[in-house]
Length: 269
Image 1 (cartoon, one colour):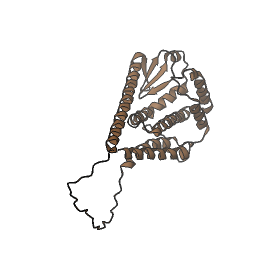
Image 2: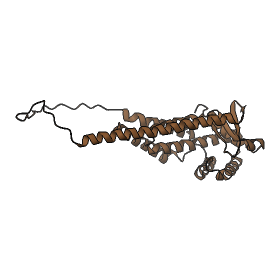
Image 3: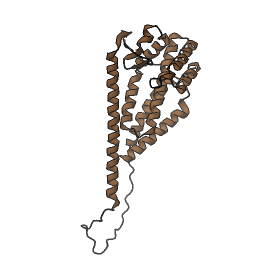
C-alpha cells in the first residue's frame, strides 16, 4: 500500500510539473481542463500497472547444514513488531484525518443547501438564483447562483457577472470541484492535490471569462468590471475569490489570443 501511494504521489507530481512547464501559460483552456482531470486520474491508475518479467531459473545446489530441520524456524527480528505498530498507527491517523475532512465536506454541503433555502430565490434561464442578506461575493454551485440581495435589488449586479456565473453552471465546474474534494479527502497527504485544485479553479475562471467575452464581446468593459469587483471584495477576505494572482492572470488571459489547436468549448465540459 505504501509503495503504491508513493508511486501515485510521484506520478501526480510529474504530471503537474508538465502542466506547469508546458500548458499553464497557454490559452488552451478546454485542453487544460481535460489534462488536469485526466492526468490526476492517470496518477492513480498507472501505479496499478504491473509488468511481469520471466527470469530463467538457475539450478542451484542448496547446502544443508548438519542437524538442520525444516521445523527449525528463524525468530523474527525484534524491530518487526515496532514496524507493524507504526504502520497501524499511520493508517489509523490517516483514517482519522480523512474522516474529519469528510465531515467538514458534508457540513459545507449542508450549509450551502441551508443557505439556498434561507434567501429569496427565483429562476432565470433555468438556473436558480438565490439572494442573500449581507455583503457576499457572487458565486455559484451546481445549478444555483448566489448574489447579495442589496446589490441585486439596486441593480449593481453587472451583466458580465451574471454571464460569468451562468458560464460556471453551464460548463458544470462544480462537478470538477466535488471530484477534487473527494480525492483530497482520500489523499490529503499528497501535496500536489492542492496544486491541482488551485489550477483547476483558476482554469474555471478563465473558461467562464472566455464565455463572457464570446457572449458580450467587450474585453475592455469586462476588465473594468473585474478590477472593480477585486477592489470591492478586497475587504471581504473570507468571501473573496478574487486574489491578486487570479485577477492578474485573468486580465492577462483576456488579451491573449486562444491557441488555434484549441477545440471549441462544450457545455458538457
